[in-house]
Image (cartoon, rainbow, N blue to C red; front, side, top):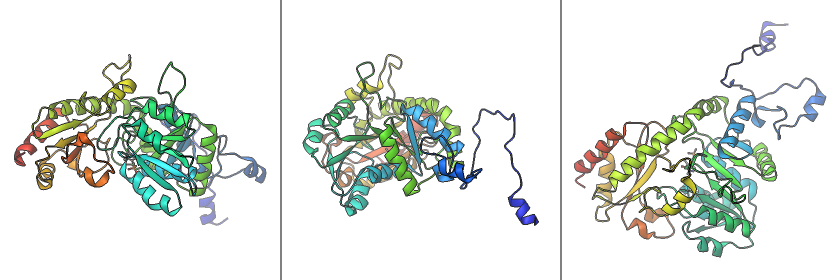
Length: 403
Ligand SMILES: *Cc1c(COP(=O)(O)O)cnc(C)c1O
């Protein structure tokens, strides 16, 4: 045997008696079968065997199982980003002639995908008012195949009546998918929305693991979780055909960060609430959008789902927005964002560094929302800095921008 061949066929056995609590990082495109019969009979869909890197490794199977546990589901599929998880659900479940309903305050690329590729495939969409159950009810037709839900809504943080929306979807026989990035599997249980009062839950969730599960701001990944064996089968077949796998190193990052997620979520929640309450006292801001504030749209629905006897203060993501006084022109709001030093201008959230982003809601929403009062919206994503430093940063930037 030549040395080059011998290098490739060098016998490797995983170390025996190496029982570390951390999950091994297994990297493979190929999985070797001991014989042809094994190749023909192995089944990856139920995780009973390994067949190909894309179909799962011990590392990705473990991460999937932990994420399903986190969110209260039984099946999980990993995708290369949160948006890829949204796209995967749409591509797996929708066909030409179907219609998908998306809340007006959804993560904006979800709507863009519907306007772009879904429209190209002959799949129509409608945008509904997440705060109006009757509006959703009026839009469901025999062509409606899927309803997207988001709690709280992106940027404007309205908390919908999730129980009523899910009940409506069930009554009308329409699948409902929740973008669970905000709740992260911690703030409420998407698959058991009315504990003790009978089973009511969404059909599936997607989660941008890029946010809290990663926690480092250094990974893009998404997941899809469901309790339905049938949906899991359909989604897994699409996963095999679409080929959207994740890298072992990225899976390792998320596995490593998951145990600390509840602590980070809590810390970022508390800091965000402290800042949101302080912002509510600042005259430059006409409204603070954070579902734990009683003045924020959907507060009662947030209380219903996220406040429990075990967590009387409730749970929320460390993210909120302010509506600037309508008299401030766009350039003044931009100057305020530019004047912040600790809050960096950037998308995403859930990492250690606080972020800020100005939004012009008029251009991204179908409907005008009265609670936005015509002012520009600025979103703050709270990192792990000390809250007093963040408050001082906002205070100073307000002065510098003369707001
Ligand atoms: C960030 C985000 C996504 C998309 O996640 P990526 O991993 O950045 O693609 C989806 N939904 C919500 C609510 C998000 O905040």
